[in-house]
Length: 111
Image (cartoon, rainbow, N blue to C red; front, side, top):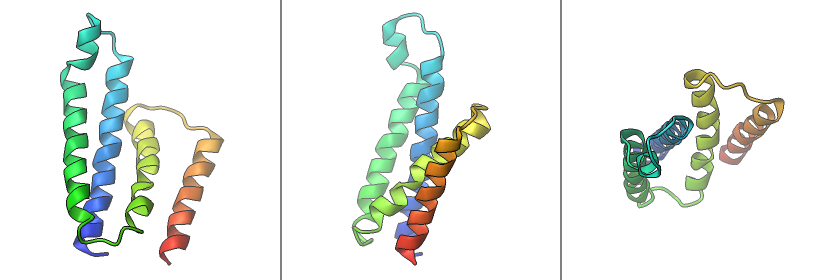
């Protein structure tokens, strides 16, 4: 794995963490509808998304395009893991099977 593929992989971790941050904000009660969108969690999450966009754009200049979407599918796996660890959410048998299929697909594609 070269450093540009590592950038793509790390960007998926940041993307998943920002999605979890948005979910945390969505679960909270807010004073008004404007506070739902203008609070530090939402602003930080979209800032992270913007950083991921820049990192992906940079990494795609050096990585073959066929590997980008494959690496990006790990976002689903990380969202499930972060939700389980940080939010104490239970995942279903279907979610677990789906994530195992994603991992198996990535391994088959890259080997």
